[in-house]
Picture 1 (cartoon, chains in turn brown, orange):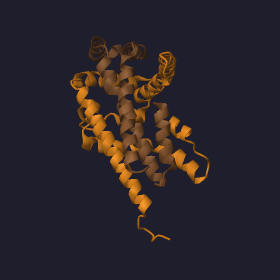
Picture 2: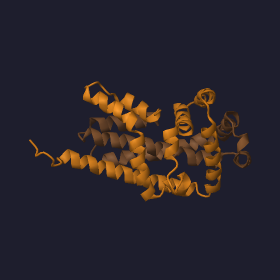
Picture 3: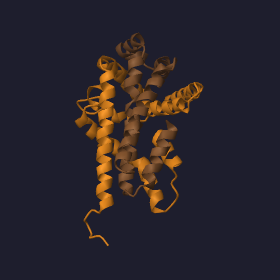
Length: 102
Length: 162
């Protein structure tokens, strides 16, 4: 993914569009990538653990929250899905750049 | 020389590319969201937990959490892909950095409830650009001083925005 992103940035940097538009594109890519993360993580969160913390705010500590996230990603499935969605976002950006001759 | 105030061809093309990219990214996220539907209650529960945590975080707690997530990033990298570490950075940012955290709370919407609706995404995108302003202001400053900005620097900023 990083190589794909770098190639996109290189294409944008080498284009003649104004710097302010380049920065808007980077912001769009950045927010687009980040938007893929939480919905997937929430899908994989252990629901019992999540419900227990949600119903008992006093139990929400750094330790319990970190455990919730760690348990969400420990088998790697969530990140594999995030990676897939991030790849789709970058793929769409690539297509637009190609269509626009960038 | 172009007339002052009249956009030239590059400016028009640039805006077209930005608009098209924002639209297509929003559409892609919309499609993804359809595949992850039915998680609204879980999202609300998580948001409550995250709210509780961020309200209670002390400076020491932040250090502790950062240490936990740093170790976690390294562990994820062990899966064989740098993406996992980068992904962990993104998660770290969304969990703990207040401005980015606030991004998730679109009034009347919420991430699952509204972010992926096209009209909300437009608002999100505008808001996102504002939040990212600090990150890109530094980049713009470098442009003004003609300091070299490599694709590596920009790529890293996109992946590691703190």
